[in-house]
Image (cartoon, rainbow, N blue to C red; front, top):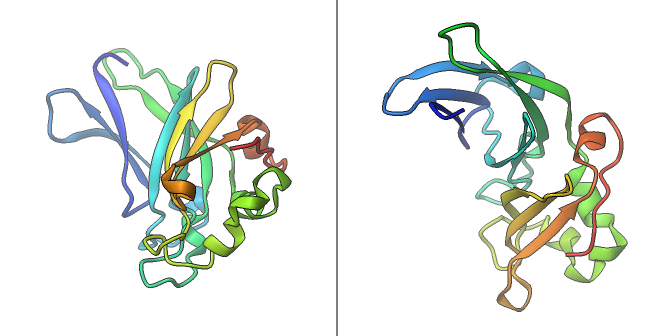
Length: 179
């Protein structure tokens, strides 16, 4: 709201709510159990986008910095904003289920084949042509745009439409549009 904001950290699976002008958090939502990760796992939350009262969150979906598989970084999930009781800050509630099939969808989508995302996903995120998600933005029609920092075909960032975000956290397969 006008007085509060939420922060997703790339080092853990806790969302923290702050009041503007205060250094200490006023509320938090620990998503460790919801996301199915260990408390010390680096979920690598990279971006969020607001659609109505729902915040969609996305992790990097990349390997770790050494190029080793990091399945805990393959999360797309959502929280709903819940108004706090009188005088209390807004709260967040996890909704749906974490979607862990986005990397597979990126690798197999026919409209994205020529970007060779399956090959990119086998590299460290910082390598040339590695795979690393860094952004998420809402569109006026309820879709999301997934922003990739890597790979950069022709030195241009890829924006990939996720056309059914609510269905994806509802257990359906993600539908992706052309980049």
